[in-house]
Image (cartoon, rainbow, N blue to C red; front, side):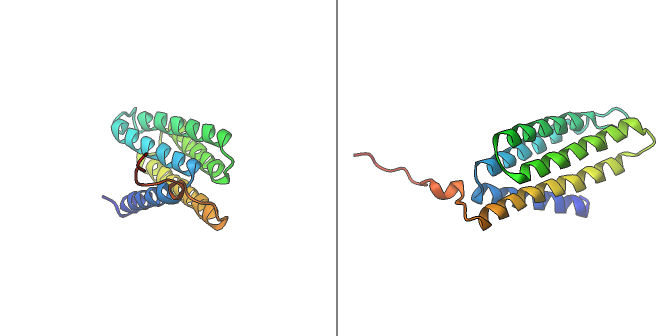
Length: 149
């Protein structure tokens, strides 16, 4: 595994755990969207036409759609930032179609950088929530079942 790939994986896992633990409903929905997208990307990573990874492009397009849906439903700035980065990911996929001389390494590197920026935007949303004094969803829930009389 390449060093940046390991960094990307560990950053993602750590961010997802912290955001799920301390985030609100929009942040948890963002984590769920990212986890589903990662899982589906692993399943379709071998679907290619030349250097275009069209399986991953379809997953990224669905991820962009999911974040646009989330942006319409929630009033968080970080979701718009993630939508912008996901749009740029789609531009990277489009460039692979428009300029066939490019190799897959440049495409993957661009998408890793944009993915890292999107994950950091999610983390920034959690930081803003913490600075605003909003309670996490997990803080409102009881972890033990109460006995009924």
